[in-house]
Image (cartoon, rainbow, N blue to C red; front, side, top):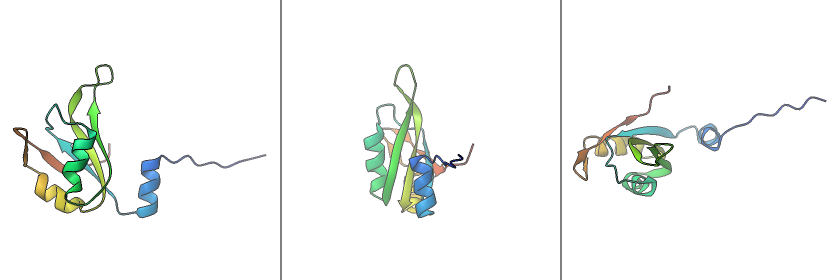
Length: 99
């Protein structure tokens, strides 16, 4: 018996279904910002599918960057938030590049 199974992560599945989401890199984040605050920052400009601040595995401290996936308003968010100051730090915001 042969069973063909394709495992798809929820994020890649979303991309396959909608085909129009954009993954955005956000750098130079304030150390205090968390996922929900990052999502709220981008939600003012469009529809946020996910927002994740990258943290150190052992200490759970922010590494100062994150990723936001948007299904609408991504270009507007990049234009509005790149070089914007949040808690005294100028954000670096651009389309995420594949590894």
